[in-house]
Length: 401
Ligand SMILES: Cc1ncc(COP(=O)(O)O)c(C=O)c1O
Image 1 (tube, rainbow, N blue to C red):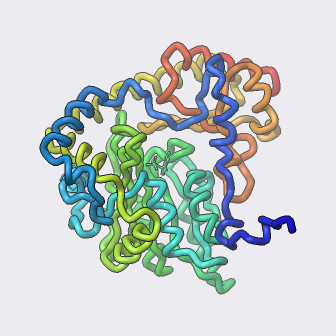
Image 2 (image 1 turned 45 degrees about the horizontal axis):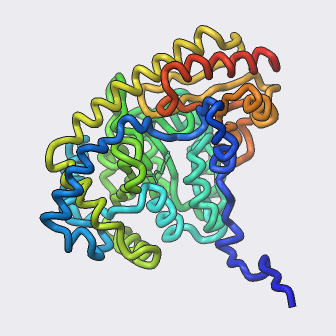
Image 3 (image 1 turned 180 degrees about the vertical axis):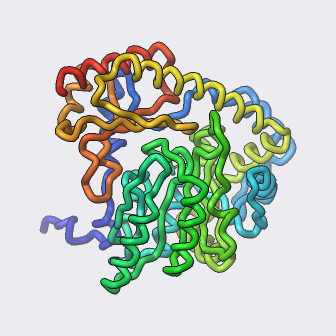
């Protein structure tokens, strides 16, 4: 008898979706294509030599510990460094409220796993981080999207939606935001809106998931305080990662949550992978304790600022007047808006023919909107590629508008 595999899968598995970005990235493997599609850091920023030296030192001095299973919560030396790191950003976090995760992506999956029952409402930004939508989708929420403007999620619209959803008897669980140099739009949630977000969350008894991988990559302007540090009620979970600032290959992220939530988070991680690798955690902790992180961050900020400036300059020079874009003060991405009648997915094939790639905007919209938008990354391409790639994109847009 032939097996009907589709009858075997769980409800959770049937909620899974392949990442559109990962599928598109396969097309961009051709080295002739200038890819603005991924969210990859510039590999020249990886501290290869220092990691090599520290690795040897750790194997010599603490080899048995480094190669052994470790605590689910993470290695203490790293968690202590994280306490200090976040204190430098105005966050007072007890070490017990921190768990190390396999990249932030694992933190997002765990959040979905412990909070979402099928049909629960999860509020997200329009557009929102695709990997967040993908992680939560497995648990069958109903997504409700709130549009952004240049100051992030629009609080009046959020309030209207909360009223509407409550009237309809919906169970709203949490609000998911990427408040700093958002992936995909590059926009930052303003200080006033962070305060308002917390007020609304308190009024409607909701949790907030603050996912902030890009916060340390500020090129200019003043950082608004994290939502976590403004929250006096313990309703915010904070996620961050060293993927964009140190090396994504370590898959080194962390999640901060109040004790009652952390207890569930730890149980969920135990079921997933018991613990993160001890070796890479100890390397990261040692790198931080040798005081290397500030210079690493400063070097990345300097490099990406130059790249962002180059991209903004080229866009201003070549783009048709009906095309607009965001001007992020940090991070890795900017967001392009085409005239309403142009669908970035339909012209994607032509972009690949012109040997330039981006990510279609609608991938980031939980409601299928955003067809005339697209995301471009400025961290990975070289300066020459940025110049040439923007020209190719402008050629394409000029030919279809
Ligand atoms: C907003 C956001 N959250 C989480 C992640 C996942 O990060 P990590 O590579 O640490 O899993 C990313 C990666 O691009 C991201 O942009």
